[in-house]
Image (cartoon, rainbow, N blue to C red; front, side, top):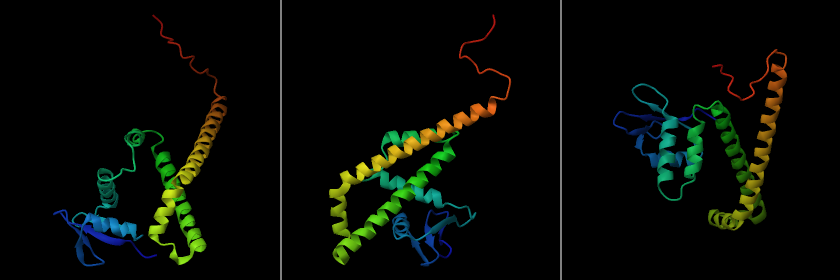
Length: 182
């Protein structure tokens, strides 16, 4: 795979696709992403990487119209992770889960092609997925429960390791009572 497709953002807020030698819109950038084309958006004046900013702008537009993917409680929780000690862990966790979901989806698509041949087009796939949505939701819930259990086990192991590591120091942990003297 070659280098990402370069999109330059000019001060007038216009996006220029250097590959197509044409100005494009956010809708066009979204289509490039949907088509699986790796891209990079840079500020034409400063060379600052704006890719994440543009992708977030596309997500914001998608969330504002139609059926949003993220509920208010999910967005609230994501915001709460910023600045938290687990911010990096959460980002990695979400990335891995989305990657796993994408791989499962690709496998299901490939298997359906083998089962139903070429006549199983996009419309049929959409109908099939609508019928299978409750089953898929159940599978995903089971997967999330397993992930949660693994995360809790990891947290318990980290606590045990921390206790063992600090057990060599001659101090007792606070009792939780206010030890101030009057």
